[in-house]
Image (cartoon, rainbow, N blue to C red):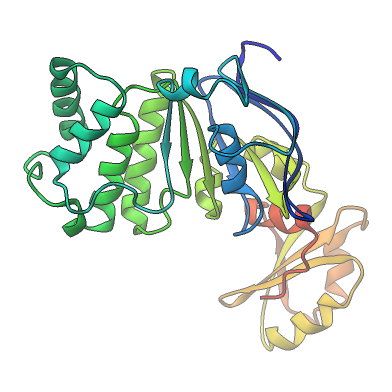
Length: 307
């Protein structure tokens, strides 16, 4: 394990009874990058983060975080990492100011340092004027900004975010990601779990997880380039019937209706997929299009998506 990586794991596994929540997960997350866990609920994202933060012991495997081995270095790492949970975990019956002061005390900030840092965060996360507002009365976007401020009050080297945008609207999600890029620009390494494809595309690198297993790992563009399928969209009449006909073809990996179009993934070993498809679409118009990360997810997990 080398210093260029903020997180390295080999064979990280967590069993709950006979169920492998995380199954021999290997990670190598570069320092100063944004790395994503992409996958549905139950795929092992949160369990992996809990092991990487020292909150849960692995059943087996090696874990190294910021040069320290886990389990065993939880106290050393406590002031070097930040953790923002999926559910709002601050005190709803405390004000914004009181919550931040409490977290600053937990991380051992001296009073003057804490005051200066809190003032900086209130400005940075658009919370000025809300210092005396009860956290429980805030909107979803405001709570999100407060939670991120609390998670970074001690300037962590490594920040864990477990589905941090699941309860906010698209505009707040966009603004939140701008804050993450600001943190990354000053050297903070970020590991974020998500089930939003557009968020996953913003990551420098990501792992696609399914049932505790890593199905793919790389930059979003590299994963799309190596997808192993061609994407063709078809427009025309009676798309529902056509979809049912196409999904039975062994060459077709996925068919999904998107408005007035069918998005079809055809295995890359099919020679001239447009010509192959033309004979089956009865004169409807078709065009090959750029793959998306959702397409990558479908091909990696093996789901024959027929939504």
